[in-house]
Amino acid sequence: MKEYLALNGQILYWTLLAPFRGQFFKVGEVFHQMVLIGVRALPMAALTTFSIGLTLAMQAAGQLSKMGASQFVPDLVILSLLRELGPLLIGVIVIGRSGSAVTAELGTMKVSEEIEALQVMAINPIRFLIVPRFLAMMIMLPALTVFGNYVGMVGGWSICHFALDYNTASYIAHSLSRARPWDLYSGLVKSVVFAWLIITIACHMGLRVEGGAEGVGQATTSSVVWSLLLMLVANACLTALFFFT
Amino acid sequence: MSTLDDSTPVIEVTDLVRDFHGRKVLNGLSFQVMKGDTMIIMGGSGCGKSTLLRHIIGAMKPTSGSIKLFGQEITGMDEKELGRVRRRFGMLCQSGALLQSLTVGENVALPILEHGKLDPGIVDLMVKMKLEMVGLTGFEHLKPAEISGGMKKRVGLARALALDPELLFSDEPTAGLDPIMTSVVDILTQEMTRKLGVTAVVVTHDMTSAFRIGSKMVMLGTGPNQGKIIAAGTPDEIRASTNGEVQQFINGEPDGPVPLRLSKGDYVERLLGHPAPTRNSYLA
Image (cartoon, rainbow over the protein chains, first blue to last red):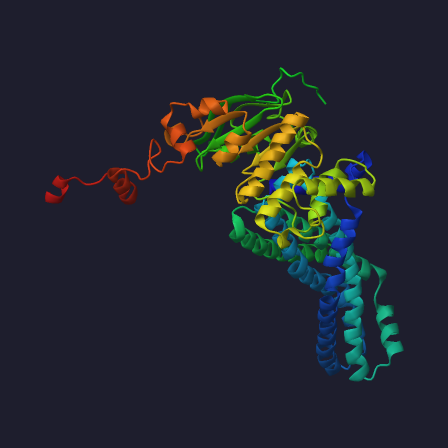
């Protein structure tokens, strides 16, 4: 725990303070990591959120039509996506794709003495390796979340349009009239918190790997498990804070 | 940056002790390395050679004792101060420790780019020169995974020399190299020390290479002498040493003061966890 907090402190120092003292992180590497973490996750994020939007609309249509309230399907889809499912689903995808990859990569670098070699060359591993991954995650997870929200709405629209005879304009108008800006912002705040948790846990687990291939495997498992658990707990806390108080 | 006159040791280790869970891996080591020396640290497997090197480069902190590099005590230094000292030396790790995500050329360029603001054309030229020195011209664009183990080590050496260091540490520089490349690496080390006045510390158990390049040697003991220096001096003094363990080591004899096998009694005790039963106990 102490090491984890120390890592958080070091990341903040090397991201926010060190550049003012002339010690820059590599901007090119940030973009490279943004491609790995964000751009390459687009197909998977699209597929997942589309299918969830679709499923939500189907379930909602079934239940709400019993009460003669099927006109509320777009409301349910957009609110569920913006507030909860968008950030959570994208978080799960990114943990599985990138959180695990970051832990495995850093862990392998640790066991093959690459990180020690960096230190011996007087190159700070936090600045050189961690900060670009941290920034890429902090930028790309919220961006992916916004993207996922859109695609999820398209999923909901496809059911409303093809099965419930909504026209596109009224689906969009209905959704937009129901959602408030805060619904979007709360989801984005969540995704920023998730991004922080995912990348700091992934880096922490990767940097403390000991003992070869087995250690890398265990660290990757721990990284995924802890990120998921803490993300779900954080989500519950944030929902309580934003919508239940 | 402190400047040294020739009488100040480049490395001064005094009473260095490192305790791992009650086991003293380094046990009161003291030695000095002067400017221009090639110090060979040798000893059997598990004697603490690499651990000693990791302490000298500041990667590990000792339990007690003092380590001075360029006259500065490094045991109490924070990362920033240590960084300043580390810019003055180069290190060749046992496995080469190249960054797998970068090409060979980018690996060699890494310390140059990180610690200086040079024109990209000059950096390219420096990288080519360093790779040419280790006989790897034209390999700049390959990834470490695409070259052999021996080549990785030579790239590691090129990277260690990238900033023209005053002090070079090599951990098993010739292990895994063919005899010709072993001589190339040896000659490179010799040229650096003789022509440029670089100080080198080489951990090795390749005796041919050790006697070819070494100007000073220390040998660490194993078993009861674990973590202690059992012999120190010039190569000729080491050759003439009357210490049986030293003679066994430099001549590569399978049996001697370091036994080939444990005695039968010890062997049984290790297997059973208690002393071997005597004849009487069978009768009882």
